[in-house]
Length: 390
Image (tube, rainbow, N blue to C red; front, side):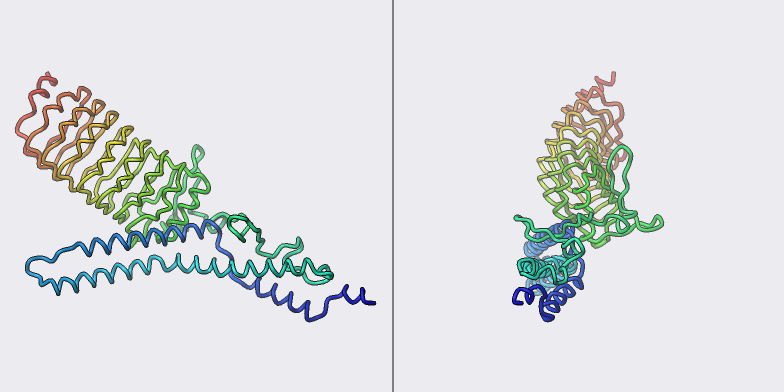
């Protein structure tokens, strides 16, 4: 008789298990690992950019006719605006990370309940904590490194949710973004980070974000550096002001289009993009190039037009495979003498600058076929060049 009593759990026992199961199944869906990583990347990026912007504001000095006290108020206003904008940028990501942490608590509790039920003498007589296969409905697994995590292997924005976002070419993996019937979806920072996670997971070789970022997006998330298989990256026609230092991790990148943004400078890690062959930096606000730029020795085509360069670094002479160089519409007053080391140069466009003369070393460019100098102050060509033209 005593044994029979243990074969059937008490009603209260069953009700307790049922309530645990019901509450667990009513919880919102667990974010995927990729979504959580994207959110963490956004938080890291925003924190870094906020710190840099606040430091930049602190370095500002008042104009002569503005009292220091009044200018100090202006600085505080500027800092408050930056902090508010960064708060808005991190809001969605912070909420997702908070949700994931909360659900981790529930995951631990349901695993504990499962262990208690499975170890009971009448466990086969109580409702299962999951589906027919004995797993909870949201399919959890335990990893020694990551704890409890989703195991349904759902791709970030896959299936119907990712329709119009991912396009695969026959020769390479490419990700482009659209929304519905040919309309372009404008992405916030969180969605950009999620797209990058998708690219990293699928091993995409082409990512096209041309004109697809919201106007308020002024920087890219740090997880950009995860795109280790990327060969082409299109970021033109946005409002990007800064690139993350992690961009230097894109070791296989061969084509980079950053045309028509608001870039002020490039990180020193930019010189690590040593596979780069085609680079378009035209129509930005760049005044200088990092010294590491000379490491881009595989560059074939370089467009620096419509910026604010007053000079080019001597390291440009390291670009021995460069065939096309466009520096039209800048404030160049001179070219570095090392330009003569760019022995592969075929086309050099210098229109709309402040050049008064060309260096003698330009005569060494034996392969040069196209040289444009319209709207400069050059009165005569260097003697070395005249001889080479004869």
